[in-house]
Length: 168
Image 1 (tube, rainbow, N blue to C red):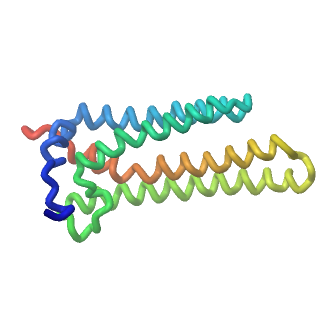
Image 2 (image 1 turned 60 degrees about the vertical axis):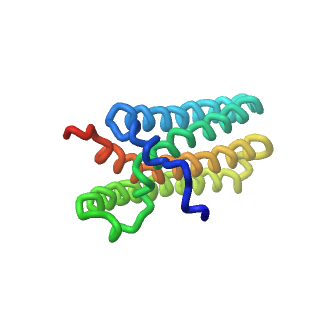
Image 3 (image 1 turned 135 degrees about the vertical axis):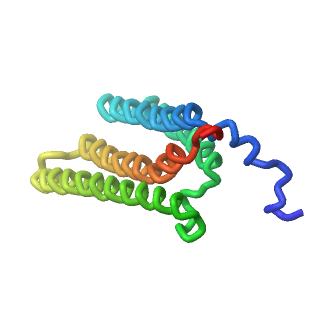
């Protein structure tokens, strides 16, 4: 038996998530965990709280559970080449990839511009010590959240489009 001859099928288990209700639930719980994680991050940076950073990390890891289930429910088609999908699937996925790219570049521009402006303040001696460290942590986490939100859009869009009731 090879690694590809898995005795447990994820297709059968994923069937119950291929409906609009469970799909929306997975998406809401995934982005909900990210939002909770962001709240803990803001608290951690504002009050120098290590427990809040730990809670933020747990919330971020928990967001990976619905994300993984969502990707299993769409058979990871969000990462497949467009040539391996039918025309409507390819068109839908391409549309969501373009939206994700636009969001990613916009968030990167905003983050880069804010960092550039604040970096000039660093050079002038306006920010030092612990405040500078918090700023750099905040920038790093901003980029992490930006990536997580924009990178998940193609799978979310594909799931919202194709995880419909079988009667439709």
